[in-house]
Length: 403
Ligand SMILES: Cc1cc2nc3c(=O)[nH]c(=O)nc-3n(C[C@H](O)[C@H](O)[C@H](O)COP(=O)(O)OP(=O)(O)OC[C@H]3O[C@@H](n4cnc5c(N)ncnc54)[C@H](O)[C@@H]3O)c2cc1C
Image (cartoon, rainbow, N blue to C red; front, side):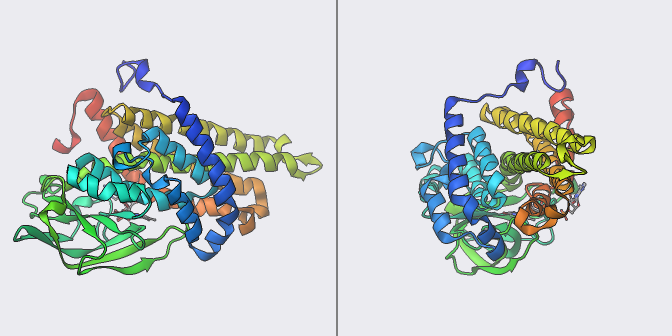
């Protein structure tokens, strides 16, 4: 045993030639189309619509949507490549596009055939946008603590509540909304009784209540959503009644790999910039790179970067192989890569000195962006809980929740 797995082959990373082709394509697009607009995006906290349209036309919203629903049929490795390459230039655009993934995943994994046919092709074609609404001001990590309620009315459901922190909620046409459909009966099983619904933006009683300003990822927006007596037919229920918690967890487990890859892209570009600067900048008549302290920063940066890359693409490979263990690997990747990128951002600022905190140098924005990646898609404290719970389950068959 190579704890907690059975053998060495469990640590394989699998790339195909099409992954490299896709990487080159995304990289070129990011450098040519996104990079020249980054300052404008930061200053206006808005991604210009013509750039959004170009990305939609490229099919970036449909990377993970199967070809039968009009998408590119990409796997998790491809999604990670997309996140990494775009994040090197604009982490915010990864979030802008990635918010759709949190709608697409649960529909793909748990939706009916009718739901897939209705909702996925317009997203893949870039005609419609989508978002995921689980979190509330009162409950983020504690998903089972949400207060939004749905009750049966005739052959449909009436939903009431308020959601918070919803990425892309200002531009989305379709939402998955989590609501409590039956009361908590005992504390150990409080995760039961939650159900997802698909809500379209035009539905009566559903509206964006307020924009929430944040420190980084400028250009991607988060909003609060208000649901007042929103009625949807039962055909909009996503997955079985009462199974919403499991659907949310499965969605976040997948999404986590994308966030880890987003952080990896940041760590990569911060290292490249720091390395170049250390060779150009001289202090005391010598280039920075000849000072041992600076080399320590650079070496530690690259150690963390390479380790993060292994974790990101390993977790994506496990997910693509349909292996249950991908959840353990995805949490390792998310916590590790986001903290590696945070470390890289701090050290890049140290290497650049005063220039590092000047906005036009384009270093400090990565520190503001990376702080958010540590929180969303399950805060890193929660990743650590998942890591230990999954490890015990995989290697010893112990379920901590039943202890
Ligand atoms: C920019 C941004 C975009 C987001 N986009 C979306 C979205 O599109 N859809 C959506 O549904 N949500 C979204 N979220 C919400 C996000 O998932 C939550 O913010 C996150 O899960 C943390 O929840 P919280 O903010 O309520 O913190 P809390 O749950 O209140 O946690 C506060 C602190 O306590 C720690 N903590 C909590 N419980 C434990 C525990 N048991 N053990 C140890 N530590 C613990 C947390 O790690 C955190 O550090 C977004 C958030 C942000 C900031």
